Each structure stands twice: as C-alpha cells, then as structure tokens.
Image 1 (cartoon, rainbow, N blue to C red):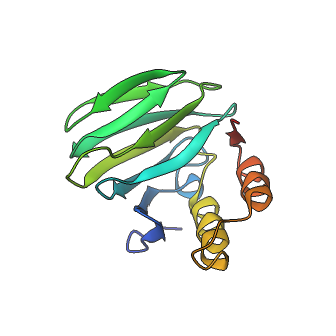
Image 2 (tube, one colour; image 1 turned 90 degrees about the vertical axis):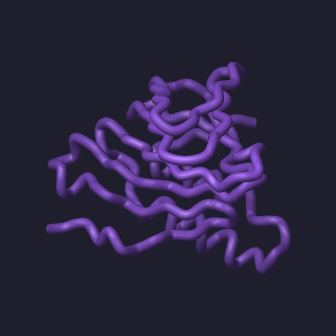
Amino acid sequence: MVTDKSEKIRIGGLAIRFLVESHTSEGSVAMFEFDVAAGAKVPATHSHDGYEETIYGLAGVLTMTVDGCRSEIGPGDTLCIPRGAAHRFDNLHSADVKALAIITPGILGPDYFREMAGILKAAAGGPPDLTAIAVVMRRHGLTPVP
C-alpha cells in the first residue's frame, strides 16, 4: 500500500503531509513534512515514550524547546528528540517554516493529526476540548505535559 502524499492535514498554523507511513515501512519509520506559519505557536508541550523523533530543517527557522533547552533549527539543521523528552516547537520568526519529521519506530501516523484537526474544527474558533485533546494524544503515544 502506498502513502497518499497529496493529502495535507491542516491544524491552525500547521500543515502536515506524510511521506512514509508505518504500513509502508513495516512499522520501522514514519516520515512527514510539516509547514509552520510565521508566528504560529504549536503544539502543546508533550513527550512520547514509544518513539524517537528527528527534525530536519528545510526552510525558515523553527524554535524547538526540548527539556527546557531552546534550539533554532534552520535549513540543514537536525535535532534528535529522545523518548520521554518534553518538547514543543514554535515559529517565532516572520517567515514560514518547512521541516521534516522522522519517527522511529513508525508509531505516529496521519490519523493523529486528522483527529486533532477534528477537535479544533469542532471548537468553531472557541477554546478546544482539552480533555478530548489529551485522550487523542495518549491514544497515539503522546503524553501531554502540564
């Protein structure tokens, strides 16, 4: 089965396009390209115990905060986020960001982002249901950090 590389999932100032899904790699890896609009602050601080995440900068500058340490990821820069590390990212700059995320093993898939988009859409511009967000995060291997 081939990944539908044309699907772009939008969540606020974030757009995600999967390039490799778990089912195409026998579970070894998932990979997606993501765009972060200028000034966007997403997602909430979280960790994941079941996989590592590696971020590779393609365009713009992404501000990553991992276990309280801030790093700027620009084109050609790489950051590895180990299992259990509390992290988040923001685009604090005036240019949009494009980056690549590699998830090993390939636990996280597009369903997580589709479900999160659905929760935000249901909020209709108001505050989202934080309990529903936490449930979806946990179901997909992410742990919200208060």
